[in-house]
Amino acid sequence: MNSTERLFAIKVSLVMSTRMLGLFMLFPVMSVYASDYSSTTPFLIGLAIGIYGLTQACLQIPFGYLSDRFGRKPLLLAGLSLFLLGSIVAASATDIIFVVVGRALQGGGAISAVLMAFLADFISEENRAKANAFVGFQIGLAFMLSLLIGPIIASSAGMSGLFWVIAGLSIVAALIVFTLPSVKPVNYYKLSLFAFKEILNPRLMRLDFSVFSLHLILACGFIVMPLLLIENNIVTIENNWQLYLPAILISFVGMVPLIIASEKYKKTKLVLLLSIGLLIISQILFFSLDLSLNVFLILLSLFFIAFNAVEAILPSLLSRTASASKRGLAMGVFSTSQFLGTFIGGAIGGLIYDIFDLNSVFLLTIFMAIIWWLVILTMPSKNNTTEK
Image (tube, rainbow, N blue to C red; front, top):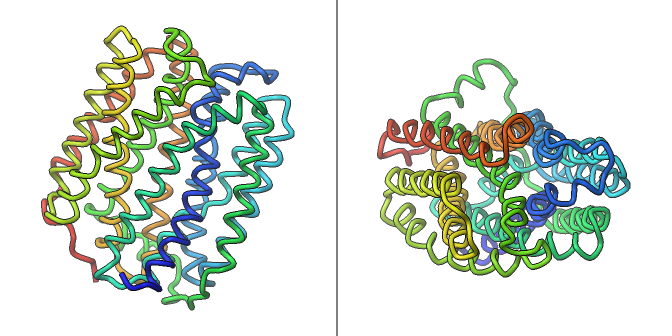
């Protein structure tokens, strides 16, 4: 990438990662601190974690389409304004119902597809895979940082303080958006069944199902894992960093060979199958083993290696597969699938916890990961050609 493309990719990744940091910081603390709110139930805990995924899922396609029509920057600023409003509502809540409402409003800022389409607009095709991988890496980094920062803030300032910090992050993201160049829409097209038919093909739908499954498993995992840490006396919530920090470092080292094999040596299918296999192993062992600090660290590292690798690979693969004229719409469907997975994972994971027990949630994640592995097994090995 030249210096202009590199600077643009950095800015887009900062907007994406700042916003995702705000969304993810709730994950490691919500199930532990939910008792501070009135009306709390296990189902509502799962809903508070995952509800933003429902509004994201509903609005990613409209945001992606409107950005194709009216330009990327206006939609980015509108989305970040909704995110700020939701953060303020949640920060002011004393009842978990209003936390759910605030999280739903946060999800109304459905800008992930717009950002990824913006990136593809501005970066040349030969550098697009690198740029997408870089943004995916930044999202993974934001996720990892959220696991460290979220518990520290929540333990000192409470959930209200955490949501106020998230509100501040949305303002920072909006300021970065103002510095982005204005790019004219690539093409105007009517939103029709034909337009959707063009992007709902077997190659793209496998990627959509992949991101759906990945984030369903993630949402379920963060209903269960913070509580397992407390129940098994592994580490206190404010000292989560003693577990998460080494897991983060191990996972970043572990994901590098997978990314190189996928991007440089074009072994994308093999890397996806291997990563999903690591997810399956981690979930089976979480379900079946007695957990100690060392065991938890090993399993968490396996989980994060797989998660970070897949999270970086999928957007890059999508950008090479979707046509340029429908890229915003294709990114919208992809992001809809991602956040729908978060919502369903949070809601169903919370329901399983409510009806059965905490450990039973892993049965859902194991089942989903196995189905996902079989779906990728049927994917053609060469899937890197851009559709015309």
